[in-house]
Image (cartoon, rainbow, N blue to C red):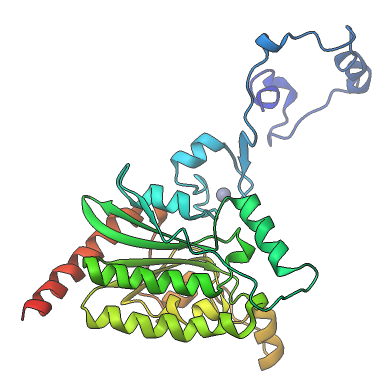
Amino acid sequence: MEALTGKSPSTYCADNSLYLPSNFYHMSSTWFRRNKKGILTSTEEKKETPDGLWHKCPKCKATSTVKELHSNLYVCHQCDYHNRIGSEEYFEIIFDKNSVKLLFENIVPKDLLGFEDMKRYADRLVDARQSTGLTDAMTVAHGALHGHGMVVACMNFKFIGGSMGSVVGEKISRAIDYCIAHRLPLVIISKSGGARMMESAFSLMQMAKTSAKLTLLAKAKLPYISLMTDPTTGGVTASYAMLGDINIAEPGAMIGFAGPRVIKETIKKDLPEGFQQSEFLLDHGFLDFIVDRKNLRSKLFTVTEWFMKSGAAAVQA
Ligand SMILES: [Zn+2]
């Protein structure tokens, strides 16, 4: 980057593209010729260059340092593209510092059916655990937001595509029990490719299980906020993701049941512009609002506080 930006402006054309002098190829032979053989820098003199120092936005191609990206909550500074992040990052964004306690980490998925496709499901689970350091596609945490308790259950797309298996359902179920026992609001952050096919009907049963459990939370007058992020699809959309007291989404997130190609082939019609994106869903009444990641903390606080106060009043009445 430095070589392209800082050194010699005269080597640029008006449109900022790089101008190469006619004798470039002659010059380049001296520029790139190694004068001294071998690597001469001693280990002590070497500068630490962390992996992935630069990040390129997949939408507008703008570059930023990973540090800048982190301080901007993984949102592109130029086009507002919300990069996909996992539970660890969301907990850091939402909760007060040092208030996070992970729950139900002892629940881990099992290959109940001895399922095998390209690979054994049991091996897939071992690989996913090793590569992500996670126990499953759902991580639940109890933390504080401006000092007020809250439970956030967040999906991880990097764990087998954020697929909903028995563990996802069980963790949501226990998170709901925990919220009722401690009178806390629940936030579920969805990010999923749908049901976990390797668990067959067991994964589909989670749709009914989580939906039924959410009615218990409603009966206890406790709020459930559903935050849909890119992508939220399949059985997750068809169950808990769309059942929030408030359904919200991040900008530009793909949210739907079946993919656009399947729908197009079924209805034999072209799909409208922006179909299955947050903004389109908001216009068609599926969402209550879209929240930019930088406002997520304050919005969640405002909404849950309002519900908790009116819920407490309803319980006392
Ligand atoms: Zn961008």
